[in-house]
Length: 106
Image 1 (tube, one colour):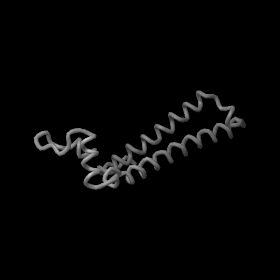
Image 2 (cartoon, rainbow, N blue to C red):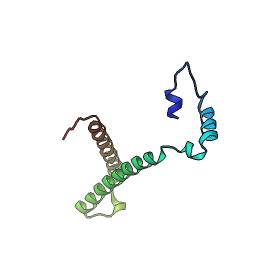
Image 3 (tube, helix red, strand yellow):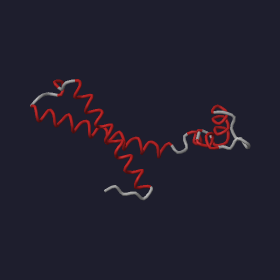
Image 4 (cartoon, rainbow, N blue to C red):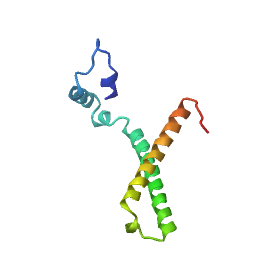
């Protein structure tokens, strides 16, 4: 779909998403439709790994600190831990983007 988004208005290769899918599938088959997905999968897998690791560490910390079971954690705390885990993923994404442009924050 990047080809659809980056094409010029004067020399259009695709006339909308369905036309792009039809043409790509006709030229390259199913491999053409999924081209680039392996890199996306790696990116997403690492992001989810950081998210769940952060969330689980926060939950384990509260359980150890208060001597409670998982089901005794207040819902608001679970929400806060989920938000914190989301921020951790965002922070890593920002750091990686900065490094890719030669900016090293630490």
